[in-house]
Image: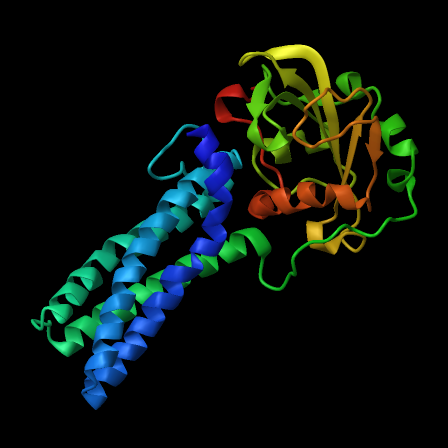
Length: 314
């Protein structure tokens, strides 16, 4: 299942467009076909409602794989827990599940339509409108959860003239184990960080906000140290050191003020990022785009994926 999550989970966002579009087109085809008494339009509506159900089912499965891949859920719950993404992920999943279940009704109506035993047009049209509306709201909720209302796809934030855009950044957090608070009581395996074992440290002024998935204060630091996997356990071999610093919103508006950095002094052979030489990536480096794109999925929690609930330090 882990492999399926890695390979097929990212297909969830594009797949969600199919049930939305198919359900809308089905309503239009059925409405016009009924009005014009055009059999070909009624048959098209039937085919589109069948596609709506099939793509909705695929999207539902891919959604679970995607949430698992990003670490939004632990295990494979049918419905995400209330605390995940401040409840937005749960609401999104409930809407999608309800829309998929309701699409079974339009699927049955499509089958009857193809067998020339249709339900009353008003009933079929009403069901079709309800399905299209539910899928539309589900897609809108998912889009808001990731992208917000008016933001474009993130690109690397422009370098800013501060300590966080120079080589001084890593010197500022070199004593993070002593100056910051460790948020987990044991290392946990992070799929989104190359399946490495990680510890998360947060600056003291941001601990409460981090625990409650709130907005961290300006100036907050989040440092994630990582260790290579050794047959399902954390090894002593360091992986990359991941750093997030919350600056002014005006400096990085597309990432909520967050700036990203990465340092790896001794890359191991065959790593998933294909890093071969020691690297230090600072805010503005294009290689950090993948960090921003992934963390943008956690926008409701101030771009923080958090620590698994069973591993959080009390």
